[in-house]
Image (cartoon, rainbow, N blue to C red):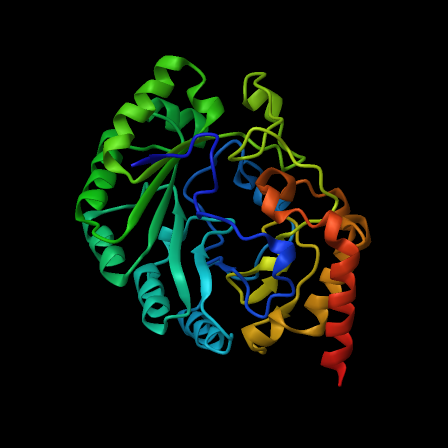
Length: 345
């Protein structure tokens, strides 16, 4: 079991991004399977009324045939992705065919790792068995407290905490190749006693464990009140914020939403819709002129890419030194300009 508190990304060792751009194959594609959640966590967009979410997705559950089409499209990349991650603005385990989705990706061989980000409240023994059998690589569990009362306060949800711990323990015991990563946000375990209890309770039933920092990325949420005055000036998994004017996410990842629309990042407000997998091929969207033109604009600074990018701070809280592109921006601009000219021919 590894402790990642104030350490590296739970996804593993990162590549120096500037050295490998442009990427013909993204490092990661995030699949957003369910626009819905059974929690209302105070730090999340679901703390807000749905009318204040803005445009997210035209459907709630991703159609399984559309999903399979997307996975089949990924076979056109020149190499497997590093990761397919089931996440987004919602709880992936709400999808009634989530195990089938994992299995289809695994059988297709389109990614080295298949991860799910979940609150784990919907885990059952049968679902755990199905996900493990399907070939899930990593289950990333976000805890919202250490008791029934904590969950009621932090997530506005009724949870049998002891049962949930039991279900996580079962998953970990049954998993052979599937890793379990468990994290909690720092403001939920501010007392030393609570933090010690978190590690004592969950270290034996996971492979990696972390206390992550609260990141104030949604302007409508009062994070100071939420955290009880705790400082929110650190990135999610590190100790200092990096100074960068260029968001790296669209250079190494994209997100396929529940309705099949493709967006270039994990932002809660989309800067641009890059394409529609109902009508277009995933690989062609990634390597298309629209996406590369957007990347080129970003290399002049976020403010030149879109109004949303100009005011977004989400990327800063998830950045690592390997992601910083600023010093290489002029060189990278030449590469992307040449790529755009070459693709026009």
